Each structure stands twice: as C-alpha cells, then as structure tokens.
Length: 525
Image (cartoon, rainbow, N blue to C red; front, side, top):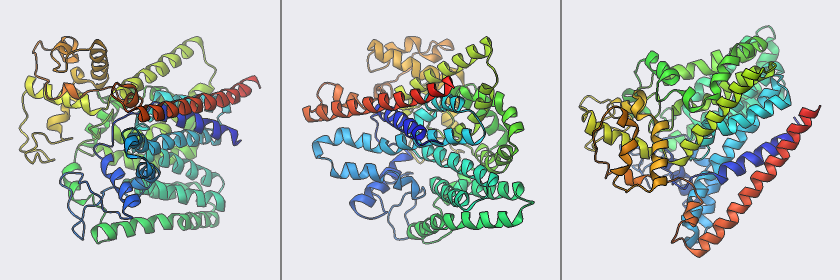
C-alpha cells in the first residue's frame, strides 16, 4: 500500500472528525479514563480524583482507581498534556478539544486500517476507497470518534488485530506475527473482554496453518513475544490497583450485568425497532448482503469471524444491558462495524445496475443523516427526557428487583426498568428524539419543554402533557466551535478558536483533495 493513501485518509478523517467534534466534557464511563490520564500527567500517579461508577470499591490501598485497562487512559495522555500546559483562560476551549483528540485520531487510524484490510482481501483500491469514506461518514464510527469513550479504541484495535491475523495466516512471517502480537496487546488494553479475540486469533492461525506446524509454532512464538509486554502491563496495573494479578476491577459488577438472554440480546442488536445496529449504521445492510461473497472468496475471513467475533458477540448478547446504555445506538457492537462492513466492498465489486446504485446512494445518505442526528446532541439529553416522560406517562417502575441497584438515586442507570423505552418502544426512538430536539431548538422553544411537546415523538400515542422542566433545558447543540461562537466568550478564546477552526478546515480540505486525487487516478486506470 502506497504511503500516500494512508496519509491522505488519516489527514482528511482526523481533521474532519476534530473539526466536527463536540463540546461536551468526558461523561459517564469516559470520565475516569480522562481522569487517570490527568493523574498520570499532573501527579505521575494512577489514582484518580473522581469515582466512577459511583459504587466503585476502593483499591487495595484505599485510593480510587479507574476500572478500565490502562490503555484507555494512555491514549488520552497527549490531550492531558495539552490541558496541563494550556493557560487558564484557554481551558474552556482546550479541555473539551483535548479530551476528543485521541478519539478523532483513533477513528482516522481505524479508517486507514480498514482500507488496508480491504486491499489485503483483494478489493480494488477504488472500491476500498469508497468503502472507507462510507465507514468514516455513514456509520457510528463518526459519532464514537467524537467522544472519549473507549469504543473507538476498541474499534480501531480490533480491526487492526483482525487484519494482522489474516495477514499472518496468509504469510506467517516474523514481521506479520510481531504485528499481530502488538495489535493483540492493544486490543487487550482496550477492554479485557477482547482476550477472547486473542484466543480466537490463535485458533484462526491453528486452523489455517494446521498442515504447516513448524510455521504455526514460529508465528505463535513471535506473536507471543510482541504480546508479552502488554500482558505484563495489564498484570502490573491490576496488582497496583487491586492487589492481585487476576483482579480486573470488574468483579463486583459481573453478577449484576451478566446473565441475560442471549437470544433477546441478539434480537435487540439486530432487530430492535429503536436500537438495531442496522438503524444506526445503515451501510451494514449492504455489508450483510455482500457477506456471502466475502466468505466464499476468503475462507480465512470466515474462520476469523467464527473464532474471533462470535464469542465476543455472544458475551455481549448475554449482557443484561446489551445496548450499553446510556449510548447512541447499541454501543457494544460499535467495535464490529468495520469487520461487518467488509461485505459492502464485495457487494460493490459486482457491476452496479441503476437500481443497485440508487440503493447504495439511499443507504449512504441515510447513514450520513443518522450520524448528523447522533452528532447534533450528546445522547444523554434525549435518554433522560425519555425516562422522565416514561415515568410520568407509563408509570414509575418498581426497581426493588433491579439487578443494578437504585441506591436512592431515583434511577438505576442502564437497567431494564429505566431504559426499556429506548430499547423497544418506537415512540422513544433516539433517531426521532434527536430530530425532534434539533427542530425544537431551531424554533427557539421555551426551556421548560412545554411548547416543544406539540410534535414530540410520543405524541402519536398520547396527548398527555408531561413536565420536562428537569430535563429538557439541558439539551444543547454539541459542537466545539459554539464555545467561542456564542456570545460572552472570551476574546482570547475566540482568537484561538478561529485559528483552530481554520487549521482543521484546511486539514480536512487538503486531506480530502489528496484522497480524491488518488481515487480519481484509480478510476482513470
């Protein structure tokens, strides 16, 4: 792969993602990841100043530690450095951008890796280029590349691990095996559940190279050499936090969150009327149509799906909160989007009829529209409104039997009792909800939410006027430039904002120009 392709893709996507990123700080699961990065930079320590989850037990020494692997914090260290050295009067702008720096870079890296994966599978550069642009703009990759959650890290690292596995299976050289070990270590540091993918990668190699045992043994040995430092860091981090190499920090939550119906989770992931992955990443529809052709052309790809993907999907489907709420769409399947989108490339390689072209355009435009809705608002705003409305309209649930304890908070976070409307009920669809909120804010509806309710998505089913004074006023358009565009911003912040805006706009235009030129060169041949 010519270096100009990955450079053009990375510059264009990274600049665009950061240009369109949000202004919200790190919330929820992302907060401790950024907090640990801040502690590493400011105090050279791994203990953090925040407690999340709220019931997180203290570490072995009584201090508070992040529950996620260290890699989820390390990627935010560059952003933490920027925050640490920035002048105080610039922090309102620098701090949110710094938290979103790593996600934008990881999203761009994922696009580069995906492009290389398609080339490895024999896809023409022009088709691979088109599919990469679709991944970047029309799937949830764009939304999750705007937030400091770990999903975009998981997506990038799993895609890299998959590609490295297939490359090693095709040519078990030392270089490929070392690359596999490094990617495997990265995905392990993204989330420990991906240890299943490491076993799956080994199983894929074992099956593919079963008749070449010497090459298999050497490949596994070199991959282990590269993986070992990442495992050592994970063990050391566990000991430092919890006093045991085997303690991950997730133990107190396993019984509460796991034990759900795998069939219900699988049905929800694919066919929920409000949370289906196909709704939030429409190009996956075409990816599934092209999947049989991909499996026929590359058996190794099918083997990797069986050994590396299926076990993790089954684990998440058995998770009581299979959608990963609070989130935009099904959060626990975001890591799989590029892998499933491989089928799209094989669907595009077939000569496109007029109807197939129309279908492609419709699906891609629909995907871009969905991502615009997801990017317009931070997802918590409508989720809180939907829970508030559900409680007043359909009744406050009995949470005494909730697996996720209420603990006097008036809600139980991602438990079924509170999130079932956005999981299963069309009147509470996030897509409709975000469109409604964007329209109501554009109209300038009063912050009490009374006027906005005249076209609320649940109005198709009830005429009840609910009290949204505690939730509606929180909603705001989530774009970083509004920090300095809105009235009252500091002149110094405005100057920095304009400079960064022009820099990112130039990077997007320059990277896109390079990318388009390369794409056209392929078209002309």
